[in-house]
Image 1 (cartoon, one colour):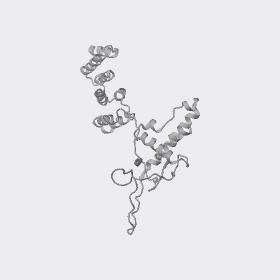
Image 2 (image 1 turned 30 degrees about the horizontal axis):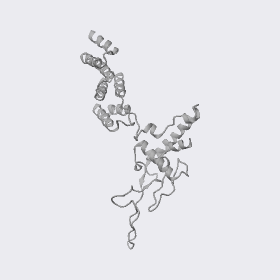
Image 3 (image 1 turned 90 degrees about the vertical axis):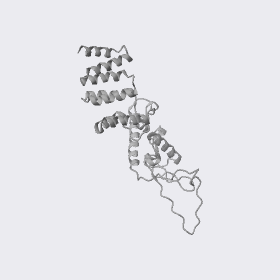
Image 4 (image 1 turned 60 degrees about the vertical axis):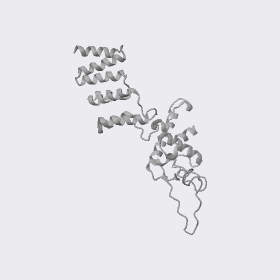
Length: 270
């Protein structure tokens, strides 16, 4: 469990941890540790940093600053040969970082969030009757899933539709899907846009509902639920012929769909 807790406090953001790499030698012991134990070995800190960057999909520079450049040698001294891995061209290593610096505000945010993660896991272990080994622990990746701002897709799309309109919301969905489809960053399953369409319709926004449903059909052209939703939208907009056409398309895909059958009969009677 101690290993688990340390893993959950992963990364240099949590610890403000590793020092500036010593030029011409190995790295010194970590400094400015504030979440991890003060005596955490440097190699453990680096391993946790790697877990953290993977969880957020970032690089070290997201939270750390570059080390100050080494001052030039005196003019009467011959320049020292370049250190291995620091020259130009092949074999050039990454620039040295000042890992202990607290200059970037992201480090303070990360420390607070990772303390929260530890508190959540400690509370779970204390209050649940399960053995500690069976308790599902919260981790950075639980929420972030490879992105820095882990807002749900529905929240992003709804806010964009509200503030910037249909075109921007549709463009955002297409862009995010192209970039993140196949990852765990966002939920692109069929019900997501369908849920947005139903919510829009319930709040008296049939045009928004129409946009979500049509967008869903681009990705899921055989979505019976989306055709049913489209029929409801067109009915609300008093376009009976379009509503019937939607239901007929749903029945082409699922001939036994009871809801589509009953609804099409009702509309034809009207």
